[in-house]
Image (cartoon, rainbow, N blue to C red):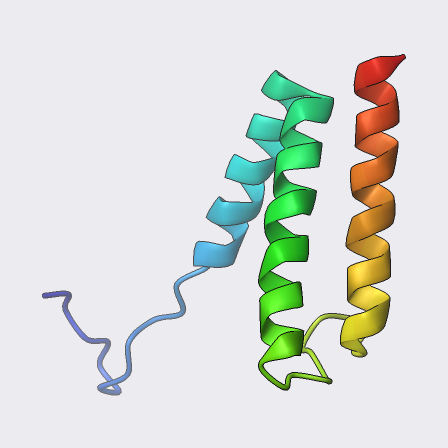
Length: 84
């Protein structure tokens, strides 16, 4: 259990920043293989969510069709980088 701040609220935990740094490290170490893996993972997740009825995302692109196109394009570029 963590100690609460004097106001009784938990302090902000910047977990996303740690996650972003870890993803960046993996991408740096594994190169296009990591990019392809993350793009495929994201595409599969959004595909499943879209089939379940999600049409708007919290992603900057909002429309899940745009997110799928974006992730698909990233995957194709990563695959081209691996092949070339």
